Image 1 (cartoon, rainbow, N blue to C red):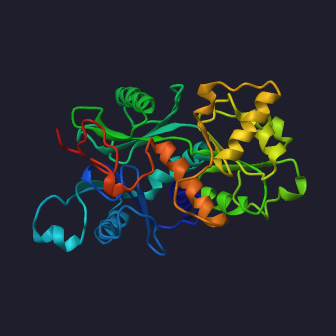
Image 2: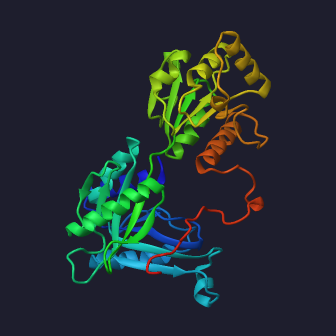
Image 3: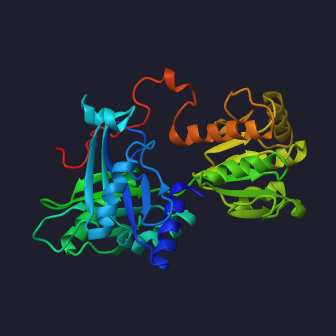
Length: 379
């Protein structure tokens, strides 16, 4: 389960139990920060917090604000400016050098949309969540108002003013198209945080052997939608593979058709049987899959491709661009767990458009930033 799913589930459960809670969300960043927009921390009146917005440096100050928010019911917009060289910044003990805006609100408002957001994530549907963080004093719209916008333009909820709903929906659709969360003005003094909630990565693990178990566990722990495919029904059990979204019984040649493939799909072929792997590879070549990882040395992949060509199947060069064999980053890993981490790391790098090298060798910031990065309230 991803952090987002964990926070949303905790909100729903707390609301059902009448628990007092406050939700802190990062709504704007500039410069170097530990977490980015959309990171959440759920603070409970009683019970452990869920989620994180920093490396532990800001949580204390946010918790103090959350106590006041739970008491008064009034949201607060906090700014932590870590760029200044003064005692306050050093008191936070931060190693970052950026500006972070955090919106703290009673969790009641978030609870009204938590279920819809959680279902969209679980059903792998993109969604934009609009949250008002500053509002015109003379309007009925208040900080904490929110609505949800689907890619087809369908809107759930209201901000209290039709013209604000229309403007927010327009900006949300633009953000969905760009694929980036952002904070934008939707009125003269009304600003909203628009969070793009993209579906999680979908991982198809072809082969239900013992070394697939840690790969499934690590990927599911990241919130990915993991499906295991095998033609041996005895291996496809939820006890063996907890956390999977689906277990698919299929002959290797039918794997792609039975599972379904889109451009968010990542495939790892690991049956360790030459004939099965050949059929898995043939099934997924030419599909929209963004990645096809093949276990085993490069020479084995070449033999698999030669065998397919001998059968009259000639893959296109463009189809082979997504094939990674051997699968995984070059970590020198050995054993199922280390190999699984190497594969997960490679898929993450591809998903994020990175090379997977050392961060110390990277020029520029660690996180990708929009061209006009500015936190709330700045021009």
